[in-house]
Image 1 (cartoon, rainbow, N blue to C red):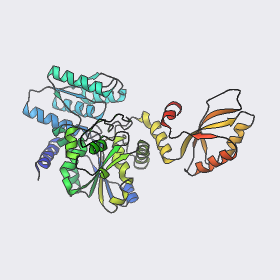
Image 2 (tube, helix red, strand yellow; image 1 turned 45 degrees about the horizontal axis):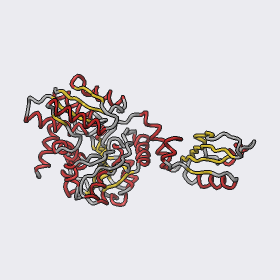
Image 3 (tube, rainbow, N blue to C red; image 1 turned 90 degrees about the vertical axis):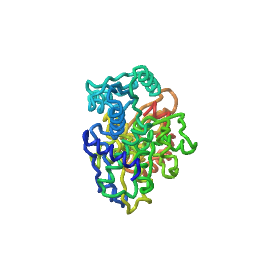
Image 4 (tube, rainbow, N blue to C red; image 1 turned 120 degrees about the horizontal axis):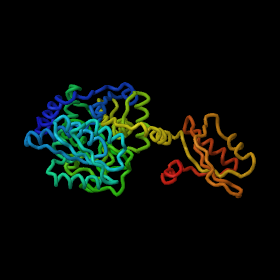
Length: 412
């Protein structure tokens, strides 16, 4: 057994004093759909509803074993890493100072405080994470604390690899294929290092934050000029240097970019069909099944559902994006003649399965035509082709703005 596997198994054994192994569950729905034996490694069922406490535990355990007098730990995070560190500070009886952006939702701040209790202090600094990180590192240096990286640390990587150790034990063998989400790379590099070449890997990034793909193309970690923050648990501008060293030889074809709207559809499917609540990053591995469907047929596959810290205030947005991705909801600008009966004419054009979800005049004037924002939801995507044909035949001009992100931000 390699040294890394040995250390990862030791970390996993030590974790049993804090929490039980997360379930490895055969999923009948996905197995039938993809004609494979598909298991979910339910990291959304840890005490903090993500795998992040594994790395925090292992890093803190090693620091305290080497320096028992260490009493201050510092981190910067807007989400799962903060909660994992808070939980472990309380467990080890040490003080934690957790820096979070000022813009962090109150729900995440509240949960971090609940997990840490009196052991932690939350400091809100900066509108953007880079500012938060800089402030936390400056404080840590000044106060003589230990900084806990969310992913770019060998002890953290080793702790995240305990996921793989559990999978191997629970399955009784190595799976044929494992699908992992990638943000900073801690989980992916740890699990891949544990299994080595014995398992086929598929790594999944959100399309709006493909830091691993960029690093593979450049041969080194590079900072993305722009990141879509929707998949907040994996939307990382630059993959870690230590994690990239462990992922640098992966084939680019084995790294998938998952569209954010498709992830929303996967989240809704898992909620409605399986009753499983996943955050966007937690749904990445399941979402990628459609991309590797041909590769995994007849094989044993493990998808790591990495987190379930989903704020249900986001559910309307998730549903909206899922409907748009599925092609059953569209928005368009309609040029409607300004005459009596014009609206009635338009309503008569609608099919029996077409529902108006939004109707708003954008321009009211004495002109012959007025612009109207229309949102239509229907039962199947092909209904729109028929609807647009009828609109055009009636002489009413229109512009489909469903995928125009700039307009959507203002109008939808």
